[in-house]
Image 1 (cartoon, helix red, strand yellow):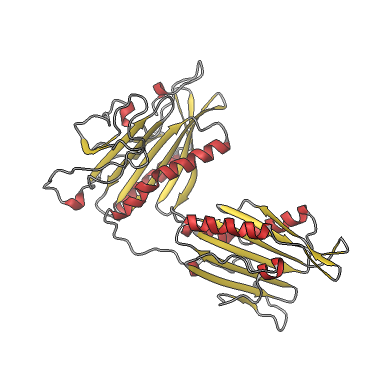
Image 2 (cartoon, rainbow, N blue to C red):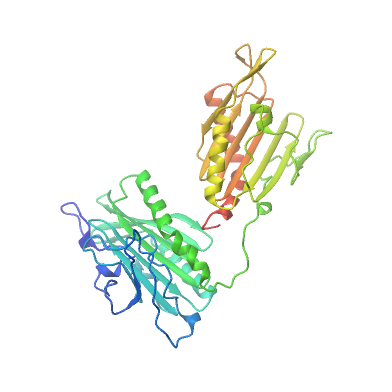
Length: 433
């Protein structure tokens, strides 16, 4: 993002972005036709780009395919002047300089492609795809970028502080926000920067807009950038990556992490992982009906039992995150409709409420009352989704949680105890761990 394209308050100095779309800098117009890969935008809603590649004597393995969808999910035409969005042989993002250090340059690449989009007002997007000799060279380029950002969390250009924050990091991927602070106050400008390595390819993306007004708008901008880049990152898996299969498996998650490890009373089983079936189902005794099973691709179960405590965990993995999201939504509807059962003066109200664990979560707490007074006996379930994996974590004890505050405190304690399990579920996200 170039300072000349930002609407700064009077007196604010110009700020320089990290990943600058080349079309805005004069370093090489990404819309010119002299370096276009014949990947002009079709006239549909997005510039998915269809190539008419010319014959080449170069080794195909040393070139990016001309039909690579680098412009996927971008508009077909630039919003400021209506010109087509085109993929070219030039980077779509300028050299990345942080505190005098170059985080990324096209040096040592075999081939580079880029695309930029300029919308109306404060909307600029740039993408670069770089091909390296092998996976190790691409990974080294990613490491250099990480090191440069880590060494420069903030810098000053023209009197404006350039503030960078890592907001997501995983295996082969990292996302940063770049914000602008003048005299102690941030303006609304926000750049979301993605660096992703898949096999021998490295993807760099810059999305600039006015999304820096609040934590909610920042989070929304980061998520929108992730969604926009998703088809590009998925297509990178076809660029000759020669890496072993790293498909995560539910059995690799430390399902019993956080559970008691000491001796148990005689006759109690203690920790059992994995088990084919659980000794008791939370849904059966909480709602008097089996919960929706969904259609998981893999299920791993574990349980812990002692005299007064029974714990269970089930990790379900699904074909994709959308299927996991739908399953969690169905479970929440099921538990929200659980009836209050009353037998011999004992009633068991069920509270269902959202929590803030992983990417999607809620808790269910079933307490015990006798003649409308709190009694001993409480069971709780916390459902947590991370990527395409869903954790069903339960506890049944001789304690009590007869009001909203106690129910939420129990859910918080369960979240803390399952922290290592939820953290390991990052393997089931797009970025991985």
